[in-house]
Length: 99
Length: 226
Image (cartoon, rainbow over all chains, first blue to last red; front, side, top):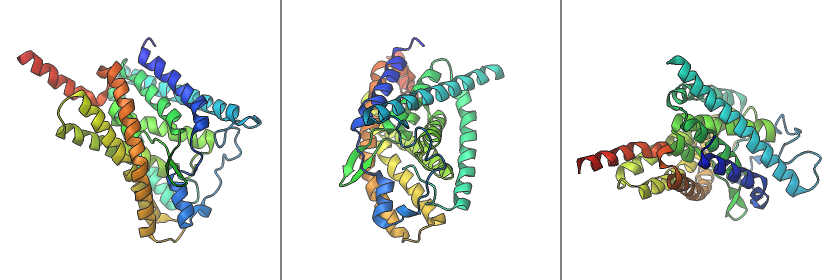
């Protein structure tokens, strides 16, 4: 991976998810706000993984909000990178095998 | 716009999950044809970057926030097939790891963002590219337009799902008006982030930008004829 764009993009992603995300707005997003205003927000059910160790973008057991959220962001970036690079390299190889 | 479990009934969710699965399967095929040594790393980066930026909610109006969806952005950078897969990977991990968006509602969200957001965003970009002069500035302008359009369209996907299978009984017009209005505002933020991100890649590696490829070829041909 000698592509400087990819390296700097991944570093930027880590900084955004691991650090900058602490300053993100915590207001409800568009759908949640609309659902609350109109009145169907209470039809939402808890996700089956609501009690998971990373649920709600925090690491269970880590008290400090900045560290908990930042760590969750870093884990998310690493997981997304692992799955997506894995998938796209596998698809590329798949194509090669077909030729 | 990650839909929690419970908003939409199970039969409707299952139907949209089936449609989403067909779309993702077609995208696996399409992506396998378009990925190579040069584009595979950018595709991975695009998915990862979208995950990161989706964490950055920005304020839009009183008491409301929005965040990037990234469908138009991914489509312009890596093409619509790979973009559909990128968004699906992000939505899947968000639902599984972070409980962001319900598990039974995953198909609904994939339909709205990975399919509608990506493909309508890409269509809007192609339209802008056709109308605007053939240069790099137009790519950024087209990216802004595509981002702007993609968000309210994805929101309309939810309105459709609400119309078919909502567990609540509030009037469809009310839901339509509120969803559309709010998401036009969020779309402005989406357009700005999409334009900035595309122009950043254009500045360093324009050769990798999927949405710039056809145009670049035209410019080269023109140069040869001079």
